[in-house]
Image (tube, rainbow, N blue to C red; front, side, top):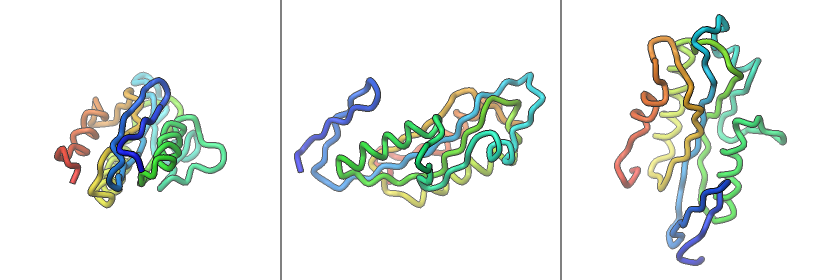
Length: 153
């Protein structure tokens, strides 16, 4: 194996040292929330109007929100990088995410991430427009829970 691999993901290129076994983690939680919408985004809404995939079970025709995670997995496989896939849940635009639904998804990703440690990298697919009851900025809350030391151990 060479000492470096170049991975192209969309318009970005990453140079990754490959002298040791590498392991990355991927997950996603995406929804565009419109605070004025009367449609509550609960777990059933994610199941009916989007998807909930666990551990890379995206099927033959992945939902468009899952495609970045599928691509990262494919690229990792070509480079001999182990890719641990966590929860990926997404839904069409709606109103605020129900607090219990958000917390359950968030906590599942944290548990998946902790079970995958130690890691060399994390790839999270986030929409950036999620609001849940009690959480005006879900991405900041999630990222603070995913923060680890530089060694990701």
